[in-house]
Amino acid sequence: MSLEAKIMERLKEAMRAKDEVALRTLRAIKAAILVEQTATGAKESLTEADELKLLTKMAKQRKDSLDIFTQQNRADLAAKEAEEIEVINQFLPAQLSEAELEAAIKEIISQVGASSPADLGKVMGPANKALAGKAEGKAVADMVKKLLA
Image (cartoon, rainbow, N blue to C red; front, side, top):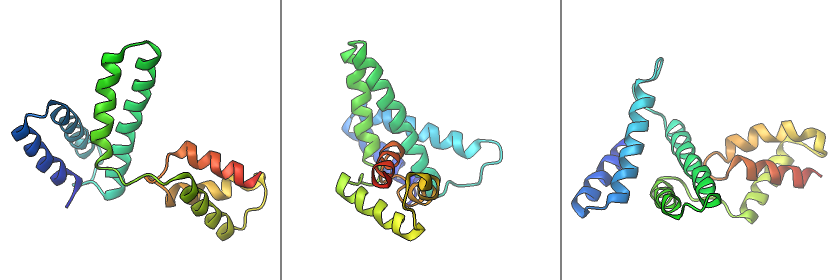
């Protein structure tokens, strides 16, 4: 089942349940999907990787907004962002724990034969591809730097 179909199904459920948070967030996701599909040069439908990238971007935007609202003591707006993050995360794959992330990166380091911090670029490409959606890019980069140091 494609992301768009899942969103439409959940949107119907949210309407029946009168869940305002889910409705607001699901409509935002649906709008983002439509924008991606109608963009110049876009394919007919989104690939799973495109869908994952879209959801990750939306979650990151809301996390950034949440941080800003928290710093500015805007608890009302921060709460809205946190609620939306929860709904978006339901469609994202589970994030790797630090131990799982470390094990996956050690595996990639051994595959590419990296041994020093100078090999950071050799590891980051395959690591970002393999761990896309399962871990944040910053967490991957920090772990690679730690393991190569």
